[in-house]
Every structure is written in structure tokens, then in C-alpha cells.
Image (cartoon, rainbow, N blue to C red; front, top):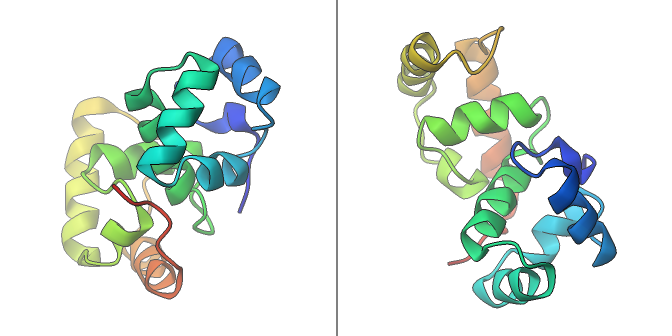
Length: 135
């Protein structure tokens, strides 16, 4: 899945405009350009956005490749310690669902929590997807 760059939590209009000037209009393009340290460094230098932020945005774009994972669920997964599709592959659905529920009780990140079945589908999907992010 690919979304407009503004769909990523924290990008905002100013950063989105800087990225658009560099040809980055979608989450897919951001992920392609920022999937490795060299790409993140180049994008940070050209855009004036901190490299750390570029990494966070790229991680969220990676999670947003999963069917059913948009901005809110990508943020929820990241807050639960799952920052990439590769990381999600290693998770247990029951344990991750419990962690998400507890986290959301504290931080109120989403209105509708994903079911354990949904989380299991995300994990299953992640296992079939190529890893994109390198560090």
C-alpha cells in the first residue's frame, strides 16, 4: 500500500512540502529513498529534516505497506516496539495484541484496537514481504 506523504504521523505540511520538492510524495517513494543509511543521510541533507526523523518516517512507511495498517496502526505498532515489517515477522500475535491493548490504555493512540486475528494477519503478511529497511 502507498499513501500520501502527509499520512505519516509527524510529517506535517512544512516537512511534506520539503519532501515533495525532492520528488517524495508517497510513503512508497519515501521508503525507497530512505531504506538505507546512505539514502536517509542524502534525504536529510537535501530536505533539512533531521536524519533521525527521516528514519522514523521511513519505518512508519515500511509498516504502512501492510494491508490494513495506515497512519494510526503504524504509530501504534511503533509505540509497541515494532518499527519495521522485518521486526513484525518475529512477533507472537497474542503477546503483541496484549502489549498493544496495554499501551493504548495508557496513551490512547487509536479508537479501535486491532483484534488478535488482525494482528496475526499482519504478522503473516509481514512474513511474505521483502525486508526494505537496513541500518
